[in-house]
Image (cartoon, rainbow over all chains, first blue to last red; front, side, top):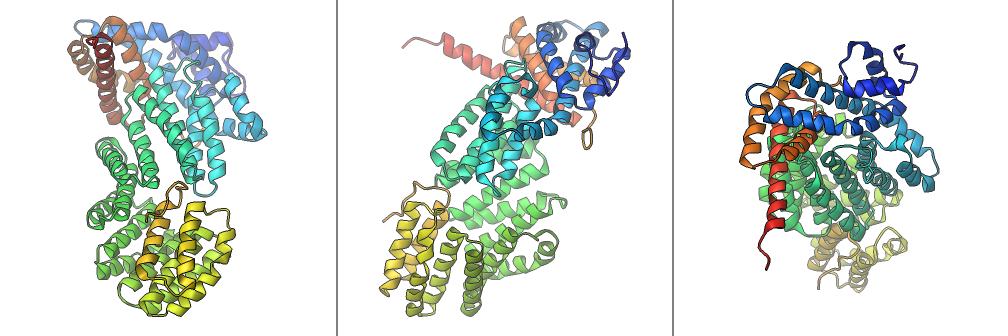
Length: 455
Length: 86
């Protein structure tokens, strides 16, 4: 039999031999071809490995249950069977990016059907690749992230058929459904996000027991519970995720989970506890992940400020400037930095400086047509003006809020809360308490269209 | 297409992994009273699962953790099947 080359597909006979005897010296070219990431040969090998799964199980049982040391033949058989799976995973990972591009070039209405029906796309690596892309796309384009998440789910739900071990197939379902739930959350569809997350957590229970799959889904559950203003649950699941990452995870994942937990503690009125977590996150996150370290530093400054430790917050914040110059070149981070500078100025009683910064923020939100952030900046500015006794100017702010009410990006309960503030401001009746209450509500309700302002 | 990817787990690494985890697998199989088919399914599934982890130390730890979880799940399923009828 002529060996395959990198440029020619492997024959079924060759792949069948590989599935049963992956280390056969004559199959080197077939292995190389697979490692190039050939989707067609990977798909065929997957089918053949599914056929071989019972023999591998029998070998595994003999290996585990035999008395004394397992025979060299038994060990070699196990090694060979597992090596074939290892080759398959590498081949699938090599092909996943190109297959995803192929799928995404199709009209969006056809993608899920093609993904479901064609063996070419029934790859665990492809489903995971799409789930990761959905996670990455979520802040730039939540709608696109939802679409990618749906595609990942369409594939992940069919993985048991090509013969992946059931636990692994469920792990992939958990990650895909978790990514979809997360995208739906950011797209403000909390009801659908909740349903999708229930599927994800159910799949974790059915899965292989991989701790990092569980912790990844838990961290997504934490974000969802935060947006649902179910802070106790958010904290509980994130504490569990942090614990798993502490034992098994990479420093990046561990640091990110601590950062997430610290942010929720600050939001839930426990900034003192958040400070410790955020310091730990800063200490764990590696230098290579400069943007995440900067974000942890900014979150620490926010927590210190909220804990009444404004001088320490400013010291931390100022010390981050070199990191900002190096890693913070995007508009989102610039906005974040200016927002924190304004809060710290207000906490120091530097109301003139705080007013100038909130006005600048408001202007930049208007230029970016970011209606929700414009509303938040308006309320922050109103608090400063009220603290300075300039009630008439707060009335003028009410008139400038009219464009907010035309935005489709603000849900009706948030609009109702803003209308309450606007009416009070227009009638020169706005108080700091009312303004802060509306502000706090808006911060909580950004992605939660079901949350109402409590009376 | 092969850029930025790691080589697959080597046969030597696989053999070493199997040698290291076998005593724990045997201990867990005995503790949970697993049948031959249970051992076959769980061992195969867990062994295939850990192949996707890059770090040999992680693979060993993960193998044992995941094996134990699968045993625990099986025990819970059986308990709920055999439990008293109320």
